Length: 235
Image 1 (cartoon, rainbow, N blue to C red):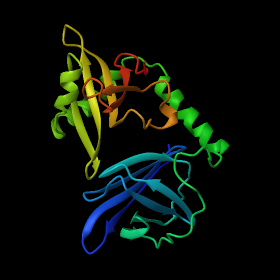
Image 2: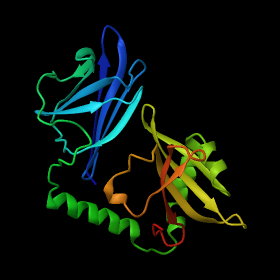
Image 3: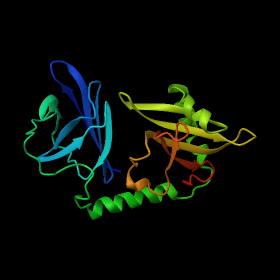
Image 4: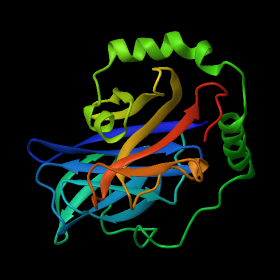
């Protein structure tokens, strides 16, 4: 699966935040973070020669984007308050020039047949049945639980389970879990990412991921999927 992630630091006179663009398969996500960012601001994002406009929701804004990132594309971002730039970083951004009106529209760039085939291959691998799967990966999973810190929230939410946080880029992380039966035997492996209910994970995982709120009626939680420890099949 193609994965491209680019992060730039946003500064004014001092460092104030960062912007990340990540493409997984045919899906692209954006994260804009800054301690002083607020809902009355907006971000202008540049990817290569294309521009995108994003209303901020507060100190941390996450959304999906109808765009593809080339490995050599420069990215830039400018954060505006009432039209004035309050922070910027990366490639030069012409704030008065947009080729796209806003995020959240129905305008989407076409997904290539190659990427669609790649996504289907990934899903086929996730749903392929195998025998004695857990025994083949047990050593690697055990190592994760020794090296990485526990994720106590998920362990409390899901009975007879234990989870760890695996950090991969600063504050970003994914979770790995083991679910056991009454006899202590591992029956499922769990995987997921923290997120919000309104922002779905990549489409390649449609039908296999489930959103679990961290508290009742909360919009924050985890997108999770579970793998049968015996067969390796996603269920």
